[in-house]
Image (cartoon, rainbow, N blue to C red; front, side, top):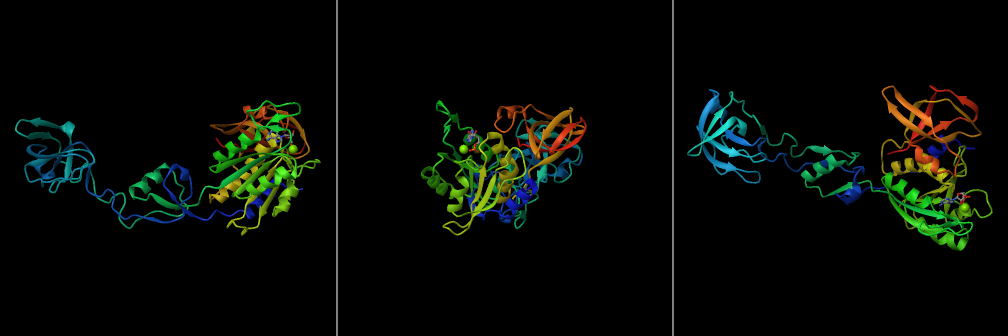
Length: 408
Ligand code: AMP
Ligand code: MG
């Protein structure tokens, strides 16, 4: 059977970043990867700019550390100066306003005193030219390459793009991910389950995971365990960049998903991974070109909620990161010391719910009580999955384990 690592490598082999698109500068592209070089068409600041509220002066007028100057005008941010400052003169100026000609320093208002007859008295040790002035173009010069392809668009990148007037940029777009729950026993969370029924927890859970992974979830509903229900919903699901199904991939009588996917043109790359929970997980890809430029990645997750959640973290989140062109697909594994002894027996590498904590001496991990793949409640106490090897062991406190951090 395939190891988790081999399965992850196979997924990445079949996953390329989505083709770049132009997109408006809105929160929809927060954290997207830039796909162009951004060159400035202006200087920033566009003029020599006052950085304090105070008086624009000629530094030579303060050679003695003291002067009384005639105030010739007031310049607030958004205005332009109308008069040059000559010897013996000053202009009152506000932060952000352009410097008047002739002046080469700004004295902050706290060092000054207004006198009668539009005069100001200043006491300040002789200022260096340029004091409290941000010169034109020091931040950004026209023609500068300010951002390169591959940059992640964080809030500060948004601000710089706005400064440059870039209301549209080319980015690697956000993947659209269709989510389909399958099972005759499922009802939607708003309904009361009848005999033999349970609520669909995977739909909302996977939707939330997709959102947290910076992608756009589209919930398609519940498909019943029959072809007439599954086939049209799978056809719809294959229109996205990714289709996630939960349930119906094991070896039961009504586990119809792999067959339906095959008939819909999905080429299977694996169907079973050496792991617990999540062994029956399926991965396949459609051929590109069936009315769609890119192929669709298809993940069939086992229906037990913890299996679905763990498979998402191990296989789907890395694929989404690759589609978004992030340099490191993850998942984020850390080495952590076990906090308490733990007796455990398992026949496959097991991703067991755990609590991970960063301390001054590195990471510590504590295993949380858990009843197995259906026990989603056990995950309420967990923020990580600790990887436990097959066998019958008393794991000792202080031993080092690999731990998958579930992203916050
Ligand atoms: P399956 O993979 O279809 O064999 O389902 C395995 C187990 O997971 C069964 O007990 C299902 O009832 C349960 N299950 C399947 N889908 C869901 C779902 N969407 N929400 C909660 N439990 C589910
Ligand atoms: Mg089922």
